[in-house]
Length: 432
Image (cartoon, rainbow, N blue to C red; front, side, top):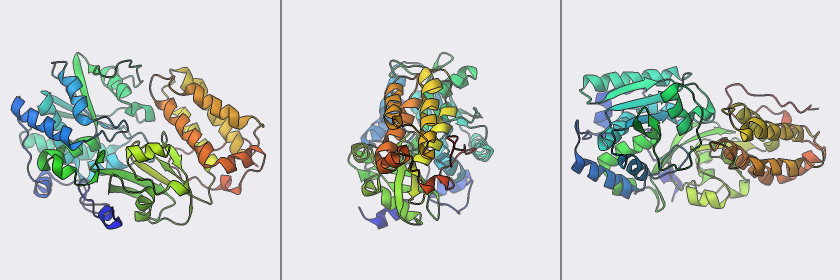
């Protein structure tokens, strides 16, 4: 793979940052071409689309990485007409890809949603946009009006759940649609579809549906021209931190992490890279050449997550940044399970004391023990992601962690955070 290949990926966001936003339906069709969406049940057409998406190897882009076609099979087995839900909540503060898609390619997302609805026999599509994302909601609503005027056969609507990190978890989102209670539910068997009323729910991330729309037009072989055998296609990545031009870029899966950061203009040497989001993991600088794809990232102890790379400069403190993230994530839980209610605040407090250089000698072991205790114990994976991120920090920034634990806190803890937060929390461990 060459750097030039990475720079020329323009499948989803062809206008690119700074280009014309909110393209109309006519512009969308002129760019991508028309797509056939049956107005009534067409089993033969549905079989062809399902086969193409299965052959493409498309995995969900919302963080779970579940094969898209396999998710459809679980709903189709119920033999009931589902409701299609587009998850454009984007609760990760460091992510902007849903906003980018709904600004630059709203009709591509809606194409995918209507295609999936036609395949599954759904009569309605609900697009969920957080209640603090008015621009995204307006762009989506304008696109819906255009499609309705053009004769869309399905009911399309926008709903505005609360802007919380955990609301984007699929069971929490469906709970909100059902009874306006955005809390995750424990799912023992995830092959059983979630429901709104008596209808099963077919839920996809906005980017996943945009990819479905492209596969329906161009086919599986075209989709697989990019990426790796076990991770085909392109993906959207939000790059931030110590870069000159932060934003959303589209890259070929398998592009090395450091090449993605290079595209956005790194401002200097890096102490590490947060990959996958606030429930992701830190990568050490020597692993920055790891390909952005599930298998190589897993070998490096990281995860693709929702497509986020935050570049941490050497002037910042990885322990302090991890403490800030953990405190914010602790405040974003649904407040219904012990691991989140008690475990995450305790981990955050220990990290804050560690960052300030005022922790006791057993702090590192205690943090690790607490991370092990909360992992796999919640109704959702919220505590799991935080625990993974924290443990990766203690590994990548091991020397700094040891120095802090010995009372030698680094000056970087006083630097302004390079992380994104709706309201950045201050460290509370008695800094000096």
